[in-house]
Length: 75
Image (cartoon, rainbow, N blue to C red; front, side):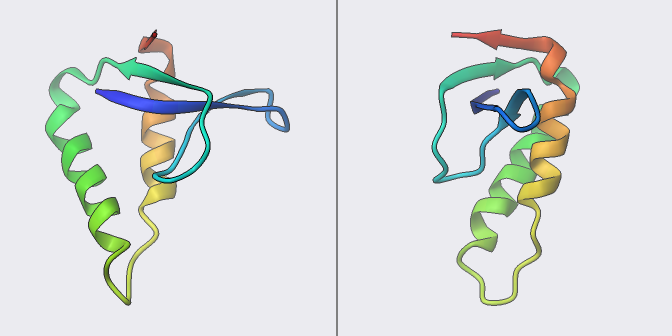
């Protein structure tokens, strides 16, 4: 799975950016068997932006994607 990453100087680490946010580079994440779950969570995050009453799933998405940070493939 491809994602956008940004260096966070406050946390001194790389973080996954949310849709529409500034980023420094693209990275690939090896999600293996969790690819479908990440796809559905990403789709839900994007669709929630269009709803009036949405749940903030982008923070959860960032936490999960950052958990895979050891398996990043930088491009």
